Image (tube, rainbow, N blue to C red; front, side):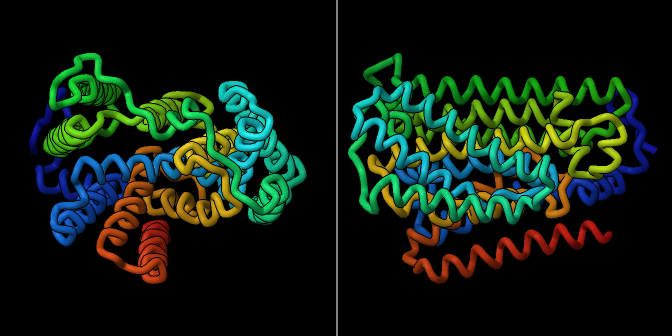
Length: 398
């Protein structure tokens, strides 16, 4: 028998490592898959994938998918689905265009109005699902049709733009370098190193607290490998961005939201209750959880994040188009399932949803660089999604 750190007792390292990897395959498998996919496209594209310009475009192109995936994760974990997010993105983009371009409203009140409208949309759909008990698939399918129609009506079937330059910076702007004059954006690199150090420290503190309370922890080798790899990836990513234009504004927004939702799902009562709701709604209700209100709030949250994604997407395009948001719901749902969320509810992590979103993003970007047609891209993405859900069903049966 081996005695590990802080009194952990394990039955042999091989059994410990193998058993932990088998139990937590969902957590580590997708990260390794993302790295493998990135390595593959880096080789076949002749090094184009990880060039600073392409990395920046990868962040800008997938920021709104990541943001919506955070909201969709909570909806899926609670045992529901939202098919309307793509239409909400297009509708909110159209609303922002009408307010700013046609009525010359300042971008700050426009953003506030759009986020409020997104929350109202989520509340309406959440009310039908939570209190009237209409299946979420039906409610949000209706919402997808309704808001696509309202988007076309709002824009009159035409593109509306361009937006004010200040609004465009929401998606196309960069954090300024406070140490000007060098070839490398020192501010971007410094922020990357600081965030990496903070994540490693928090991971270590979490591990110590888990050991103190006799909670299962990863074998030390896994812990060391995970955070060493994390540090290399984050610092390397920051360095590559620093050699171009630095950190995009939208990356900072995205990172702040990921940190917030990771905290909510892991450290708060409402986060634990959402998982309990998706795991067994009847048991959650009997334990005193107000399941209807919780379901309602997950849809409100989804509506606000879809509105934010709509603003970012519109700012990136610098115009609102009738086709904006088309098919986004499929990418967002796929990101959650590929990232380990269970189709049965009750299972899923924020980091998994983010990884799943970047798996989709890297595949889209890599296949586009290789000149693969959109038809075959859809086929490949569909097969990847099917494989991810099949793995989830297989694990569920075991």
